[in-house]
Picture 1 (cartoon, rainbow, N blue to C red):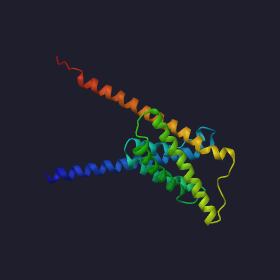
Picture 2: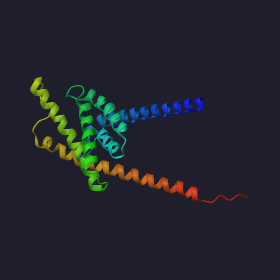
Picture 3: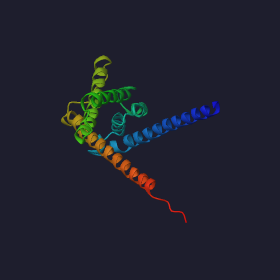
Picture 4: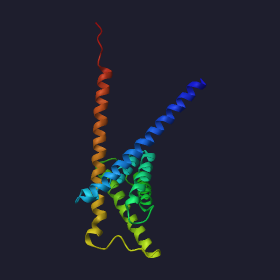
Length: 198
């Protein structure tokens, strides 16, 4: 009995370690892809954010560890590439996670397409505004030059990022639902198919 409990504990530990490894691997690969490729393309690709979409997806699927893992890994990599000082992107992603969690639990409790889009759009816009705030605080207290300016394209960037990431989240949710329905249909059909022995 003790050996069985010990083997189950080892199995759970191995599963947890595998999940942590997969989150770290996919978050790292997608963030590097975003920074090295998508950020150099035009609209809408330049405003698309893998970390934000996955963080919001984790909130909707009630998987906070997935969201927090992505926030930590992707935030660390984005901080290495960013201009706002180390920790700014990580703090912005964590703030976006808590903002999305609050919205999903208290405000946008519906699971319809409109609510999904608004959740993704609001989270992305919140992330952008937090980065602006960090930039302003750095300029005010450290005398650092402002990274963001007051051009029309910059002022419209929270709305553009919100639209792109809201639509991306909606697409991801719909694809996931289609896959689950497809696999459920396959497995149920196998369960109900009679097996004939000759």
